[in-house]
Length: 606
View 1 (cartoon, rainbow, N blue to C red):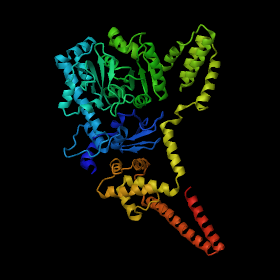
View 2 (view 1 turned 90 degrees about the horizontal axis):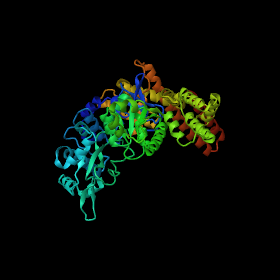
View 3 (view 1 turned 135 degrees about the vertical axis):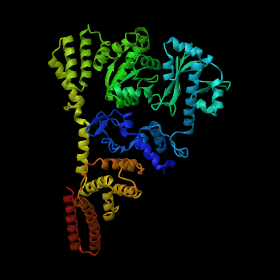
View 4 (view 1 turned 45 degrees about the horizontal axis):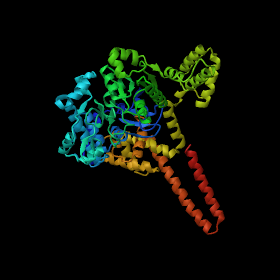
């Protein structure tokens, strides 16, 4: 058994983790009929083609073709080994793996494992020092003055690194960590005297967790005149700033529930907003939002509210973030703070209620923000600037998908600048033809069309014997008795190599006493492409009471293909012999016979 995990343990863990719940933690799923649909986490798309089937406990993307069960999904989306995926799902469902189970394969290096353990120990130590020791009083006083309560400090596991020489280095050494490795991990530094020092000494500590709640780095905020003001862990295998969002692990459930995420610039803003009752806040880690972070948010929500500082740098960063989030398909809103304020300062000055009601809930639409942002670059008292401004705004409006929104903002322009709505509409149409051609309906690529096109294209391109094999396999996956019948009459003599692989594994699966269960069967297959094909086959509609005659018809088509091709190979050998014997008449007659068989095959395939 893989990694010595008993099969009954794997089955219990699999049953305890509903695929809709697990996938729903990574993808915003919406129910359509019997299935759930969302944006595929494995490739970029704006229209949902990723399907989850609850009754079969499988997923499939009609866009990129990936498919599998809850275990293979976690392996794929997290980059986990099989063991790691089972361990992760066991923790999710409150189960423990037997002590005898060993991890024979791991994707992380030993250094990364050591780093994870070190960050775990230091998170606890820094928090303890802050809350319960005299060395931490300085940091605790600073946080209390900023309005941080004990509850907030505990929720975010905030800590303090005392400004001592080698306390942390000695602590880590006693725990069995090599000091030089801890320098690589980014928790220690080494000075000119070859002394090992705490990288974050004298700073309030903000643990940075990955999306499954493991500390992978720290942000340290000085409480004196140290430079820089904020210090992050260095980039590593575990800590990649462009892929992480601060507080995502805590905010995720609220983000899913409210279907809105609020994007801040820093840790303190997120925590202050949390204290004010905004629980769906996340932040980038001292850098502009990346494409990876934008796509991560889009998988979870339709709407992102940007709440950055209201200074020139913050407003320009808001513009860039809004453009990127819009590009990946988000509905973008922008919270408007008074000039010069950041979210933390606003909450301290005006309170939680005003922040929620007058800032977050009163956020501007994307287009309203864009019109304000673009306006600052023009002197609208000048005719030339007015024309350039209107042209620039029209370029933005042309990118909007909904006609009613386009008309709304065109009327605003028409009223403000005394322009004809007809003229502005013509300008929009001209631009949209260049952007999206004549097609003006973004819903054309909805999941229903993707699925329909997928099914039509596969049927159209496949010859009759290929379709017969697929249909037969679909029935065999759902019904062990049909698999037994096919095994007796056809064995593994399918024409398509991949089908031969699948049917061989399927026979073995049933021989081991397993009941029909596609989610379970997928785990016996080790090639992801084969797993994806099995998921496709499992999603083919099947009749509950198919007759033996229909099954026999599929078998006959498959055998007929083999018989015809065997006959052609034999005739070609005879034709070659006739040519060698200088008998062109016989060779031509054989050639005509071959053409007749090929014609018959072609006609039977349409």
